[in-house]
Length: 124
Image 1 (tube, one colour):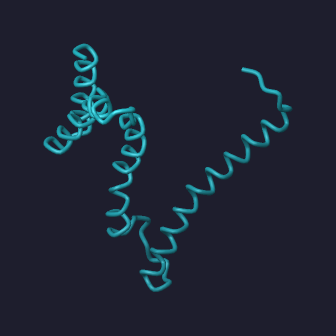
Image 2 (cartoon, helix red, strand yellow):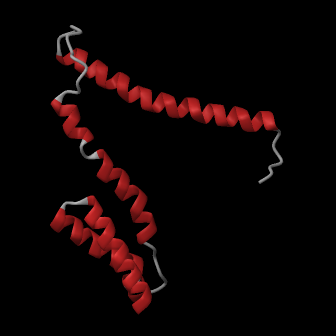
Image 3 (cartoon, one colour):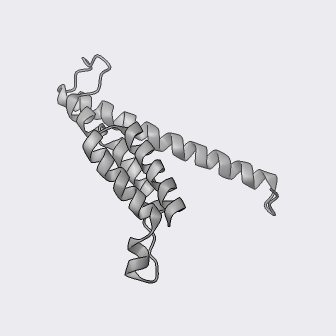
């Protein structure tokens, strides 16, 4: 793949994106450390573990990220309501959501969702 931009510009953009990505991730670590110090009254007596409150919040990050990645792929608007509701990806996603609700297993959800999508693509 070629580009019309000079190589220097491409490398500057790559480095800038890398620094920004690191800064975003590091900012959360610094935030957690600040919360930890504040909760301990300014003393640095933490044993390096994350507080239960922060851990409870972090528990919801993977489902939120997964939903943000999956929903745009399965929800597409067709010209008609029937076309939208009969989209095989939406139907397979609904089956996968039911499997996730019943089993609470990521692997079972992925397996059921993929199986439903393949079956619907063959049948429809």
